[in-house]
Amino acid sequence: MDPDVEELQRRTFDWFVHVTDREKGLTPDRWPTRTFSSVAAVGFALTCWPIGVERGWMTRAEARTRTLNTIRYFHDLPQGPEPTGRAGYKGFFYHFLEFDTGARFAKCELSTVDTTLLVAGMLFAARWFERDHADEVEIRRLAQAVYERIEWDWAVVRENRITMGWHPESGFIPSDWHVYNEGMLTLLLAIGSPTHPVSKAVWDEWCVVYGDSWSDAWGPSYLHFAPLFGHQYSHMYVDFRGIQDAWTRGKSAEVGAQLDYFQNSVRAVEAQRAYAIRNPEKWVGYSEDVWGLTACDGPGDFRRVIDGREREFFSYSARGPGDRDDGTIAPTAAMASMPFAPDHVTACLKAMKAKYGTAIYTQWGFLDSFNPTMTVDDAPLQHGKVVPGIGWVNGDYLGIDQGPIVIQIENHRNEAVWRRMRAEPNLIRGLKRSGFTGGWIDRIVVEE
Image (cartoon, rainbow, N blue to C red; front, side, top):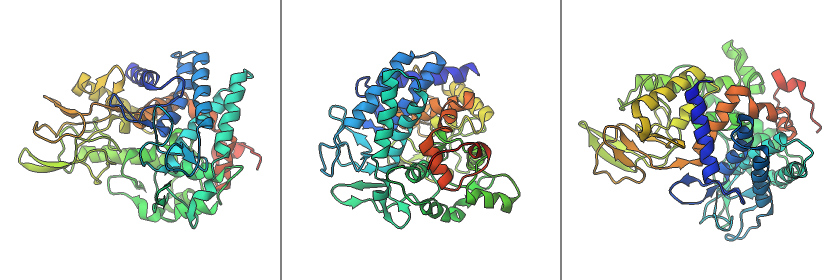
């Protein structure tokens, strides 16, 4: 493994150790700005601890203690329909939780996808902690219990579509998981549930809109979703290489080439890099070796004239080729793409470090984002600061952007997460019920 990649993975792992509460397992949404805990980031932390053991960065005993503390804490948090004092409802968890109580932060939503990422970390931990040690037995029991009490069928409020969330004040969010994005894992765990499953028709409905997403705007044809996180999150836990559902089997026949969701992410990364090379909006810093657009912090919501051209900037937002691109680069976009384009990602890592150095790369890995175009010093910044000779640099690390770096580097190195999840019965049940066949999944038998 390249030493720069090894160092990045270790530093990013150390960030989780440094910021995650050892007794409760609450990982901050962002740091050092103090806000609230992100349940998705907690799921990523749970995934990181076994990686740390395998890399020799953490003892098994420490990882076991942290994992059991976290899963037990979430298992015991109060749930209910009340708008305050509860961590979730119907088995789902709120997107953000207060650090002191573990209860809902402000008026955030009950989030189906963030619950998915939290539970994915728990299910991975349950597969990894496989010994007879009493604490490891308890990890497995509690992880399955948290998963089994999620009422996925309650979240299907429009025909064959899972809602993105719910508020106790106003009810279900009007948006569903119904465009190609990070929601695949939500559907698979919902379909695979042994207690509250949803119908396979939910997956079929999910695929109905794929035709509208198939695009060759920036290079190879692929299921387009502009920010790269949509091509990464589900892939952190599911090895899509060589397995196909009905849609990918049909598309392979149509295009005359083997297509699966892993290859789709390969193409998405190729398109992002091609976009950076073409750089149609002439943003500073984009090149064949410096690229990567996803959801991340930005300078703020304002316009400024820079080098004679008016530019519009955004604060936290999803970004992608031709979609709210404001020149803000997120290192996680490239780094978490390691399994899809290892040579290009490694070159990007080295180029970012060489060009921007300690302004963006610290003892905790990469700061969340930077923007070499935004150099004016009179802008109403919402995050970060303008560094002379560099441009705008964010001052925070975001948990949901740190986790994919550690996890995807490890999947590339030795398939650590994929290997365990290929034997995770709930996930396999969801994949098989959804119609996935081929490759490794044909060798797996799971009880219905």
